[in-house]
Image 1 (tube, rainbow, N blue to C red):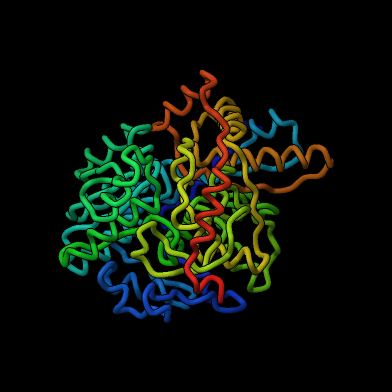
Image 2 (image 1 turned 120 degrees about the vertical axis):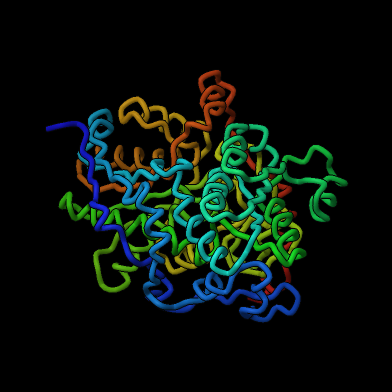
Length: 456
């Protein structure tokens, strides 16, 4: 039997609708609150940031939302993406487990992020928007929105977390190639950025700070909207095309997952894979073990508090109930920049509270150990973020070996690591350190949660 087993869907099987898990949850998640009044937000509160079509998706409880044909036409450039059976990895581990991975690195920007970037750019274009601001950590989201902006003729400005801006110059170059402007954050361009730099000139930045800058610009310019690459309901819903394709491909393989695994920062690639399966489970289907994998240096699900908090550091965004480390928390500058966010998506957080998923945390070096092992047998160099999912999948497969039982393990390989070579150079030079978060900073950030959190 061949070592390479690839399951590819015909273009005619490209999903026509996104899946909305809100329709199948046993109860409604906590409301999004206005930061001033602490009352549930309405469409008018979100209108300065998002076009109305995306606001409607954000609050929708319909199970399926039609994917516009212009968006599907762009998707066809790389979708449906392949599902692989990792036979060579199975052989190397000598495990009875079956390991599958959904590979999202085939998109133009090299990750899952264009699944929502293209959709968001489309709806903004339909609304007549000329400019969009956003933030990015590792640069996967920023480069994906830059790509989408080029397709729809929208000017894109990206505030990139400074430590990643310095670590990943090629991601910045990709954004600029697509026509976007990339600014290191915190910057002197915004009130929120200047306030941070006044306190610390060499601040490494955080996603919370970058969000504050992007939101501030959008909220103060009528011709500009804001786009977010993770966390929000509509973003997670756009990513469910990943899980829907995976279900169809596993049916081709004659398998169904026992364990689903995804790396988690804000929650988009994770939710994109697992929500369609959780929806099937909630409707009476097979129960699946779902594992969210996060970095030990920024462990919102495993160490954070489930509470109302701001999505940004300057407190410009609405309050959402999520697993959070506190909006002022600044994680160490480890290489998985896409996972350096203080909070987890409210829907992912709510699913954890419902007992639908579990979470584990790893330091970065064992994750790179797993990524290098994977690359040497499967041939694909993973992004540092995806290495976390690979680490958990390998550990699960080794447990199967120790127990002498087989399980079907499926994980999302959310992107390739071709723009992250400095991280691998540091790894091979033994310069990649396992960093821990500052316990005092975490305590201070959690102590500063908004008062509604204590009453909720």
